[in-house]
Amino acid sequence: VALVTGAGRGIGRAIARLFAQEGAKVVINYHKSEVEALSLAREIGKQGGEALLVKADVSKADEVKKMVQKTLEKFGRIDILVNNAGIHIEGSFLSSTEEMWNKTIDVNLKGAYLCSKEVVPVMLNQKKGKIINMSSISGLAERSAIDNTPYVVSKAGMIGLTRSLAVNLSPYIN
Image 1 (tube, one colour):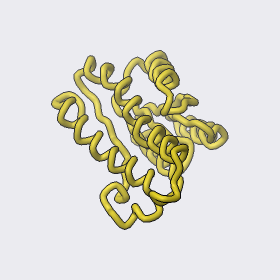
Image 2 (cartoon, rainbow, N blue to C red):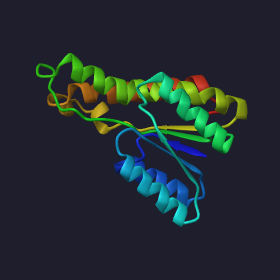
Image 3 (cartoon, one colour):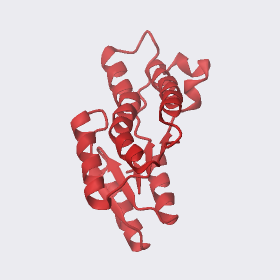
């Protein structure tokens, strides 16, 4: 069972599709792209796969909790979490606003934290699981910071979160 956040479109959609092709039951999380998410679920179903659609804003703890509960009700387990949901609002340090900063950090970094926090107890109970965090070269490259300060910081934070999870959750969760 693979839960993919931001799976309605883009990279998340491709990840969910590939997991389904490889035989995984897929949870397609979306926030705004309902039409695209529904289209993907139908596609997976036509190919003999199984998908669950769950609308949730990953930056809101109560919605993440409900998403995980729906997944467990339907499939009974979660083997893989892909923290893919993200936004990119361009803004240099000087031109970015607090609103831009909060929205970017909330979705890109806090969302991954909340999803991991909710899924980890399930995986620890199973004594098995994988968490895949999608970052960006922007999290490492200073050149990207010229026009994308909130995004760069969120992706650098994702790298730090990934390292922390790896140290804290081994050997059961990769």
